[in-house]
Length: 407
Image 1: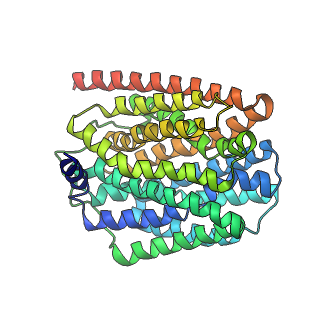
Image 2: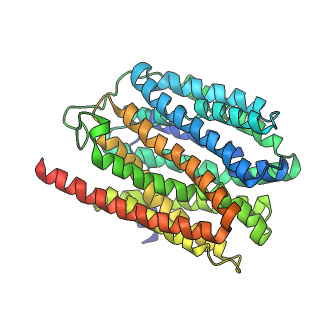
């Protein structure tokens, strides 16, 4: 029985092209090096001494840059190709990380966070489009999941290593690690993967599940994005308000916070591909799965209302981890399936922009609520928001069902 389960797990990793595996490896290197993000709010608050409101504003500019970068990355991927965008994005942002550690003023950090995220997040829609080019249509969701596994495995290693670097070298070590890993990752990609103009796997029989004339007229897509936005707002609390709460409520060290995030990454690595394969095999509707993920996130926020027992942080992280595994890989796939051929970059840009907007809202909303009303009100508000996102996801499911009936 155990052998069969193990064999089935291994089978999930078969059938990918060489380019997809290289993309997975460089994504792992890049994400393992992303040590600044989980500790950014702590660095700004504890090391540089900014107020909650100032931290919120710096994170807003971080998110605005991320939105602009996502939009530019998608638009330019359709115009000049994903390959050039990926190389420019990682190489330039890697060099920018070396500089940003020397900027400590409030205005300077607002500008530099905006600039670095504009460049860094051009990579994301370009990377999603590259998966469409290098993966067969039937492997696309699994290829997206494989790359997400690399992100999460990298993220499992990153925060724990980041916590150790802070304790031994200080926050500046994080900026050096981030910059070096960006540059190393993209050099491997540039040497090992050749540019591909058009996918050999695109065929007229699989143009996408639904064709729409304009992304702006695609009502289910925009409602679906709202549900994704809510999931993002809740999930990013893990990187904005929750690390501060760990210290202030339970006196956890950076390393302990890093270990909780590592648990998240390890669980995703071992469980997500199996969940994706099960959903694909059983042909469970992906929009329903995303809505269920949003519901689990709402529960994880309500669990944070228990503020007298430190063990609740582990239980909350378990709920958040499984929520992430249901919500994110399938939301990628749903967004890509709505895009007509030749417009994938545009659709994936708007999709990734929804997560950039979630970064902005998550940081600013969370920090402002905490400053004025405290942590408990923030967790309650986020839980309510999660229930609204769940209802919206179910509405999208109904809309797409009626769409298919009319086709």
